[in-house]
Amino acid sequence: MHGRTLGSLVALSLSAAAAQAEPVTQEAAARDSWLLPTGAGRLHARGFAQLGADVVEGGAAIGGEVSYAGPRCDYLRAGGQLRLGVNDTARVSAEQWASVCVPVITMEFGHHLEWDVRPSLLAPLGQRAGLNRRETLRFHWQPLRGPLPRVLAAVERGEAAKQGLPQPRARTAAEEARLPQGELIIFDIDVQHTILWDASTMAPATWLERVEAVPFRYAHDRFTLDIGAGGGEFNDAGSLVHAWAVKLEDLGVGPIDVTAGIGIASGSAGPFVEQYTREVDVTSPRAVVGLALPGERVAASLRATRDVALAPDGYVTLDSRLAAALAVTSATTRVTLDATLGRTEVHVPGMPAATRATTGGGALAIAHRLSPRLTASARFELARSFYAADVLGFAAAPRWGVTGFAVLEAAIAR
Image (cartoon, rainbow, N blue to C red):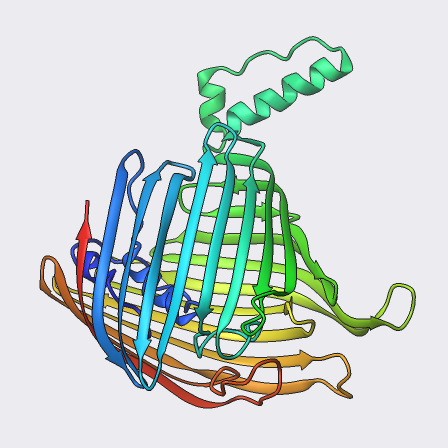
């Protein structure tokens, strides 16, 4: 099945979230819509069943999730979905995800398996056209996190003890109140290991390691500030390093949330032509600028990005992208509109020159609640995309494509 589905059923009775970027797979679009954010401190169980048809096949799907949410992370999360499409033949796709989190030191372990999932037409280049099989293991750790006054006091005491000096005087309540009251996170670490499976041999085809580290992050109620964040990606076919000098997310300026960041990224791929230089070598500034208008009835966002990326199959992209989103919600109906416009340079080892292409398009989703447990949904996506042609590997230029679905779905939530 294509597009957003069940979550609209429950979302219609809740405040609408700010419009978000387009999911990178069609199955993620369906999954993310019904897996809604939950409040902390409660055990939640949700599930759905669907019957419907898209532009190429009829089908059915079932899925569900159990989670226990905390203020900083989900202490427990486990779920999955199974989708069956029927045309001349039957096609099965599946997803499974699970994570556990130790809240005291915010240490999270996660696993995500995607089997025969399809890229969204609006997704940036980096997946394989057609069906993707991949498995991702994740480790996320925040060794030191707490209210800024307390973290600063702990650091001061530690430095004094290290240097053999008297312990500093404790701040008074009035002195602490004058300090910023958000949380300070020191050395946030996020590691992901992704394996891509070959569809014909069922053996691992390639892999990609991703590492992100933020030395200092300040998390406030209405914004997040990263200083010196950096990381990289690598496998046998290439490597990538990138860094943000500074990055500010969702700073509330009146009714608008502002995002801005500037940094640098460098990616390489192919055989080594010198001791430390590969055949493909791309270095560019990376940047993000975004505006968002959150709201219960109407939410909108506009975001511009420029970045270098390493594809698991061993080529490098330089992508400049503009993404816009709009969501309008009433008591029984939700309408969302997503649009992207991208300019991508593709640097493939063995090719004499980079390929440059313009991609983009839009997606329209409509969901109408028929009853507290039943909703009708439709979603259509039209775009000029690298994924419009079902070609494995980087062998096709962008072309126009369309996907769409109509589905009737039932849901349970507890």
